[in-house]
Image 1 (tube, rainbow, N blue to C red):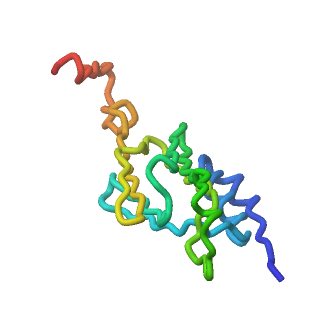
Image 2 (image 1 turned 30 degrees about the vertical axis):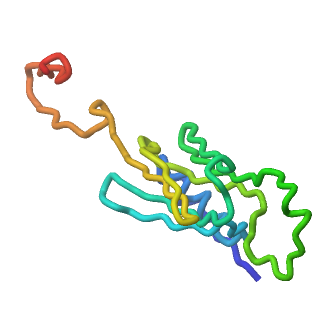
Length: 152
């Protein structure tokens, strides 16, 4: 029997962590585990997602990035050759799939490649200059901050 925690007191005292609490509330729900995947942190601003997509060709996989959602979908093309074969054991899953990944702000897809049945998607986080922290001087006189783009 699964007990649920009430996250309401924490939701009231935090700002911007809604996705985290939604994830914690839905963590116990069963999810489809096909295809299996790895998420790897390569550095502070670089990540890699690797999906095991054995049996799929490049043109049967669709990768879409929209806002903070990365969607990887696979659809096997209809093949007349499979109807002529008699399978004694069919262990390689080739069913259609759709896997979704929530991306943090400013994370986008850098590249994607497929080799040896593994699809690798490289992600990079690029925070715009306007969003990076900056030091604010305290004083009586207003400080004019030069735009670095015009100085270059």
